[in-house]
Image (tube, rainbow, N blue to C red; front, side, top):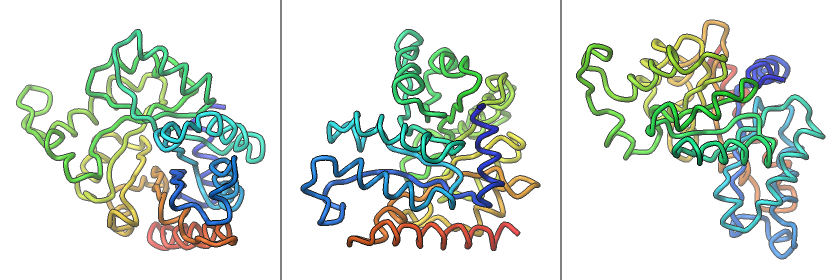
Length: 276
């Protein structure tokens, strides 16, 4: 199934805009799991099973697995999601970006090896660096636009002076170019941080109903009400509002999965209260 179809169905089926980020860190795992040989998979799979009906997507961060030499656990985790929760989109958070020949291998890594439904990418090497991903018409291509980190403004807010951008900041030029020129298959989305809701709204005006992956809620201080006000589409969707630490580390005991579920439910209901 096309990533966008899966996402739209998950929005409706689960009445949720919550994207659960899966960022395993050994020091934060519950004590009873830390010495288990398969702790990373066990922890993440339990989080998935506890929150799948409350989310619109899962987003494993590849660096958290690779640093632990746990790529095989990541493969099994994504297979587990597809097997136990069919139709639930999986976004591989990899932020890849390289020249075309290397990009071909990165696309194969994300979609063939890991079987992800979408992947995050850095667009700043230009279209040829993401073309192998764009060509996979059934897969989601989620491109960095206005990121949630403070240093994002170093380059993303620089003013572009040309006939297309008319003095707009670079992140807006990126948004407009992707929406108008790169989205031939309707499989593009953008990363826009919750920490800059007005700028998120400016992106929304440029891209229409294209989905936005929104990090920065919770630990980074993003405001849910402002994100919904500026970012939702007319039908009340259009957003994948990501929470990682606030959900997966909501509890530290043997009931960690139940605590994660409670945190995901609270976030979903808070978002729904504002979007309606």
